[in-house]
Every structure is written in C-alpha cells, then in structure tokens.
Length: 609
Image (cartoon, rainbow, N blue to C red; front, side):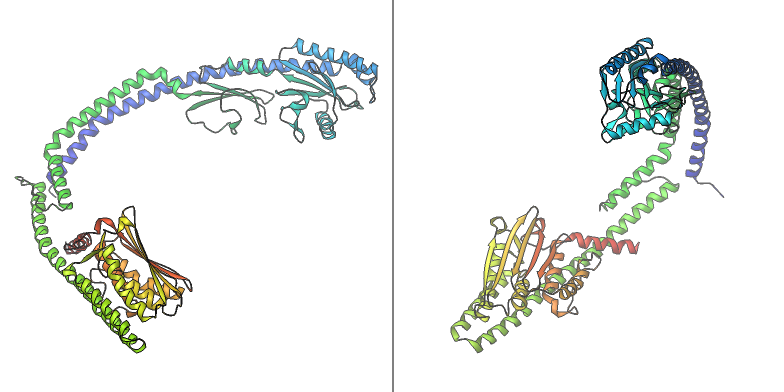
C-alpha cells in the first residue's frame, strides 16, 4: 500500500527524534542518577556512623545514671534514715529529710546528665526534691498511682515521660517538678518487705538537646530522640510528636535512624535538596544535554513546518472563521497533495454552507414572523369574547350608565390596542391600557375588588410587548377574585440588575397543588430549547390558554433568559411574575430573537451535513 506524503514525513520525523534524543537522554539520566546514588550512599554512611557514636555515648551516660541509682537505692545509711521516719512527722523526721535532700543534691552534682533528683517516701507521703525541698502529697489518686509504679518497677528500672497521668489534671512532671524523661526505681532493693518508696532521677533535657544538635549536618536538618514507645524525649526541629510512624516516608526529607539497647531511637531528617547541591554541576551538564536535544528537535520540526504544519494551521484558522459565521472566507491553494485536496474541499464546503444558510435562514425568518403575528392575533378575539360577555352580564344587573362606562373603557382599550401598528408599549402605557380592562371588570363584579399600582420610576419608560399582562390580570380576576368580597389586585414593575420584573398579585382563592402541577406540566415543554418555533398551537389545552400564550411570546421575543414564575398559596394569594432581560426590551421587534432561530438553523444544517 502506497504511503501518503504526510505519513512519510511523520515516519521520518519520528526516526530523527529517536536517533538524536534517545542516546542523549539515556546517558544524561544515567550520569545524574549515578551521581546522586554515590552522594546518597556516602551521606548515609557518614551520618549513620555519627548517630551510632552519639547513641553509644548516650547509652554509656544512661548506664552511669543507672549504676548511680542502684548505689543510692541500696545505700544502707540512707535506708536506715528513711526507715526511722514514721507516718506522723516530728522534728527528728524533718532533720532526717534534710539530710536525705543533701544526698539528692549530691546526685545532681555528680552527673551532669541528671537535672533533677527526687525521692517519694511512701510511709510519710512526703516528696523530697533536691532543689525545691519537701512537700506532703495529699491527693489519694496521686499517692495510689505512685505506689503502683513502685510495684510495677520491682527491682528493675523504668523510664517515665513527664506527661504520664497520675490524677485528673495532674501529670508525673507536674507532681515531681520536671519537664524531661525520668528514671525511677524503688528504694531498699534487697528487702522483699520494703515500702513502695521511689527514687526519681530526671535527665537533663538541655544536655540531651545539645548532644543531639551536635549531630545536625546542616541548619535545615532536624533530629529527634524517642523512647521505645515512640514518645518524644528531646528534639531539634518542627516535626516532633507529629511523626507517628518511623517507617513512613516524609516528602523531601532523607530519614536516618539509630537504635540503642534500651530501645531508644535517634531519627535524623535532612532536606534532600541540600544533598543534591553537590551534584549541581552534573545536573547542569544534564540540562545542557537536554537543551541541545530540544534545539535539534526544534530544528527538525522547523524543517517540516512549511511542508505540513503551516498549511494545516491555515486550514484550521479558516475552519474557525467559518465556525464563527464568516462564510466569505476562502483559502489560497496551489498544492496537489492530500492537504491541497482538503483545502479545496473546505472552500467548496464553505460556499455550499453560505448558500444553504441564505436560503434556509430566510425561510425560518419568515416562519417566525408568521408565528408571532399568529400569536398576537389570538389575544384580541379571545379577549373580545370575554369582554362582550361581561357587557351582557352587566346589562342584566345594571342601569345604562354602567353599561355606557364599560363600552367607553372598551373602546379606549381597543383604540390603544391598535396603536398604529406598534408592537410594544412602555410600562406606563401598558398599565394605562390595562386599567381600562380592569375598570370594565370592576363594574362587572360590582366593585368587589380594588386595584393598586406600584410602578418604579426607572421601569416606566421601558418597552414591553402589548397585551402581555392582560391574560395574567384576566386569570387573577376570573379565577382568583370572582367570589372574593374584599379582593385586591396589585400590579407592580421594577428594574433589578439587568432584568425588568412585572408582577400581578391577588389575594384571592389561590391555586391548589394539583392545579399547580398541571400548569407546570403544560408550560414545561415550552421552555425546552428543542421545542421549536411553532410549539404553541390551538390544539393545546384551552384552560391554560392565556398562560401558554404569554409564555410562548416572551420566549420568542425575549429569548431563553426570559422567565414566568407562579407562586400561590391556596386560599390566600397568587403571584405571577415576568422576568424580562432589559437588553431585549426594545421598541421594535422586526428582527425577532435571532439567536434562537440561528440555533435551529445550525441544527438543521448539522443534520444535513
């Protein structure tokens, strides 16, 4: 099968890209990847060794503290002094406690890793501290928990965090007076009948922080010391207790860990971008290679641009112009290949499209004008029949004076309706015209209802279709106020943002829910954009004739943004509101809403194509 010109160019271009880019990209990626791996391995080795060394030193310091605690807890002289103190304290007991606190002071001075030494004497409930003296613990829950800690500890050693709870609102740190992790063990280790007294040695948090900070390889690195329960002991960083899982990866951070036999963990976090500073030269070399590759690719692409890309771009611009409705566009063409055939086909398609639209569009305009005249003509006979019926009924109930007034208003109404062929009235003229009809109905119903007009000054000069409100007022009087003794009809207009709002309100019988559902069902198809220009016809139900007529007219004249809403409460009120775009409230509608017509024309054309 013979290859086309475009296919040959595409294969050749693909081959050039693979030939030039593939080896360069592979070499560049390999060099960059290898450099980063070497740097990472060296950094991990160096940092891990430093962490292990620091953890060994920390382990040795903890071992010294444990030995010191064992010696203190087994000191016969100290134990003899403590055993001599009874629950009821006397002067001799206070002297003994002073000697014990002196021993505690010696503990903090011997080892700088111990910042705080305390002793809980269970029989007397006294807490002795090296720096704050002694105090009796009175909270029963605190005393009970301290004794339970002594039982749990046995002859071994325990580490307690300062936030360990002893009672409601009280922690181990707040009772002992420390903010650091503490080593605890019971006194009198060799006596199985010992009292549950505790020796507490708190580690120097400042010394721990200084020790781990010395391991930081850069100012942006962070380091944390955790217990075997992943409780934070000391830190130099902002993550802290938020690191719940040591195994989880932290985006942008290199994590290194070191463990001690006591199951303490040192976690070092260093930003990865600091590590890659040392490979910036290699990375720059990689970028240069990629830039050269891109330049060569652009050079090759430019070589074929005039052969394929430029003609295709011209064809694309022409199609966009035709899509915007410019059917006078034509593309110069002197090529004999596939692109030339496409250009010729495009020019022919645009010419055919222009001819089709000129003929088909003109037919739709005439069809739309015919329907609008048809809708307008339906209002006058329908209204005339109802008005003559009103005059007939009034003649049976009133004297000639009332009938003459009704006839006078009727003649004024029709005189304004003709209005020398005008399609629109201003809002002020519309209400004047409407008042003649309302006056006829007031005479018919024996002045059973009143009328109120609320016209915003800004809305009075705005043009609207004539006879647009009359069907709504007719429905309000006949179906809402007919049997209402103190009825009120309200007609209002206002301008809100870019819309004219016309409202007809009555305090009559209202509309039931079932009737509202029926009305919405009848008006629903008219709001469908695909309903067509002649969606309103005489075959539609006559009981919603006026509403359908008004709704069809505003959709035809004012476009899809026009709305008719009905709000009714059965037995209380009914409000019918028209929302008309101000941009379409003009004095003449000779061209009608072309947007909808164009939409239908384009749909027919797309089907034909």
